[in-house]
Length: 603
Ligand code: DGT
Ligand code: CA
Ligand code: CA
Ligand code: ZN
Image (spheres, rainbow, N blue to C red):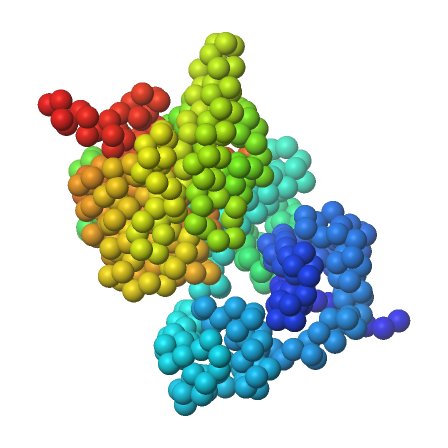
């Protein structure tokens, strides 16, 4: 029997990504490259240990893994290596692959620099750019050298910040929910009396350091044992009587604590955080003569109660109330003024998920969506929505096949037919026709004003030339905002969490222009984007802007992403009134630019 070190999910994902990158550099078949990229991504976000799945012969059940790649992974796990992969890794050095991480450096450029100048690492690339050796290469110039150096700097900053160490909420939340569901399913009824997510995840932060789960049980050791043996668990970091820490297959750490029933209120408050919020609450308690910890309050003797007297709280709200505070929604607990507001009973009535009545940004098979207009409409109706804006990409996006004026006319016929069907059946639902029109590099739009004028709700966004300098990209966006047909500014900063920083856009000026023109600011609910973020959302409301929470759905399942957008909105202190797609159809349409302008003119 041979023993090999077990590869972790992360390691397997990294190898597959390395294969994909090398195939890219070698200009291999596009579908083969995509297959490896998809497999890497699937395994990177997989909760179960890949070795366990392989042992059960179920590799091909993983989304994105077919027979061919499945066999290769099996080989890799069994032997620690795969001859075909090894050959690829030997052929293309890691340094060349690393060079592709430099912003703007595609596989083609990396390949040419490597083959024609022998540059095979980021360090060598920097040296060559600094020495002015790249400008002699066809297609490169002094300006590309500058861009490359700037890119390397950016890359190093990102790596130093460890931007990828934290897990996006879109990965952490489904996993945490699954862990809780499995705990409950694997334990006899009643063993878990209460269970809840705490920490940054309960606060809906956009990235999660580790998941904190809290529960009440009279049998803590049974709960701990069950937790540590869940199939998702790849590694155990700590195994105590009432607390365990584990690492899941995808590298995410989960802490589970069992607390006593009488400590629940204080424990949930303590472990929800944030630390900064807790500090302020603790100081407030001290002023009243109580010291606060995760069990409850203990009198210090400075107040009315005798020193040492204890108070416990069944619910978090009881603790807040005891201190003279309104119960504070977890999303607000960042020490951004919420404790003062809670004391003055002026916390906002935050928007809730069920307030959403429609979606204003979505894609169908007319552009890069996977479902038809009717399929998306059915999914929206099943969710209880009253309206749905079909906003396929316009032309001007490069890789995505866009929809032009002529196609929009044909699409309109399809939308009208669906709406007629609703009227005939007495269904209270309306499809709208819109566009996610591209804001081109010079600020002009991917569709003419004549075409835009025929649409119900126009979302304008940037997907290209995102590295323009602050002045250029701000002016570009302002031009779109001042277009009378643009109703919503889509994912305004263009960031992809952990992958691409926001553009250099001057958001203060953008938000002011949105307010001035009545352009609605999008909270893109896709957890890879969450754009605008909580702070900009709050600032937008402060300035008097309206917002829309949009899933940017490319499939029927994407409708479930709305909750992440609501999380951002709540962290931004938003109420139902701040978000236009909480209104009934007529009320929502009345808030759009055209209607607003007409209303102002009539006044
Ligand atoms: P994360 O995990 O980095 O996304 O952020 P959190 O907020 O989940 O932080 P974590 O997991 O270190 O701790 C969970 C909560 O427990 C935290 O929000 C507040 C509380 N906590 C942890 N350590 C301390 C501490 O040293 N002092 C205080 N006051 N609270 C703490
Ligand atoms: Ca945490
Ligand atoms: Ca923790
Ligand atoms: Zn979109």
